[in-house]
Length: 275
Image (cartoon, rainbow, N blue to C red):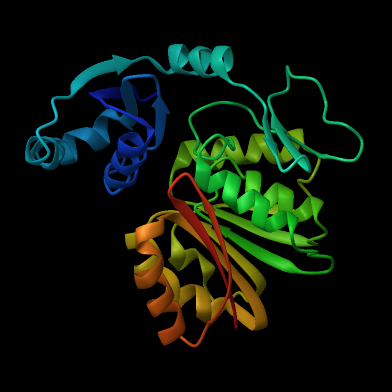
């Protein structure tokens, strides 16, 4: 197993923490944990060695002093399991670990193993994407979940009626965790985990596409999403700050998409577009 490194940086409030998360996400950091006065960012040790100088330059430029600590994989998982709390989204969906009580009968019950993949529902962007999904009926549709992380969004889309979803992530750990969560929720016949990036789409076509990644990747890969989207299809994107809405919207419109809905929470945004 590859060891992970924890970068701990001081933060003054939740707003500063959210901004730092968005900026650090431009590097290969995979998960974040916010405490009262500290933000902890986690990255594979081998990936950190490739960008340590750039991260140091970033922190120095913002007058931030960070502390690195090696985290053994087994201790990481134990830490997540000990601190993982269920996430309630609009009273209509409960994202929980296997050791929590089931959701009420009138609420979607989504079981996510709390390991190293992004997408447990705790971050505002996953919450926003989940809330957006709850506003749609995907009955009979096929979909794509780009940057799928835990697979939580693909699982919810299937629970909302999708007949098939491809869940694509470039990270091997996310792929394995997604596979585990698909099995845990009994939807392995309707979700296909794929290890790869946007090139994995190939010639496939979808009725809806979900992409909760970050601004730069969205801008780079949006054309591929549009090409893979059927006419009348839906594209929902997040991983962006409210300040990023204009540049994301301008790019989407230039590709022929129509803005539909905006969802906002804690300075973050999820945007819906139609083709």
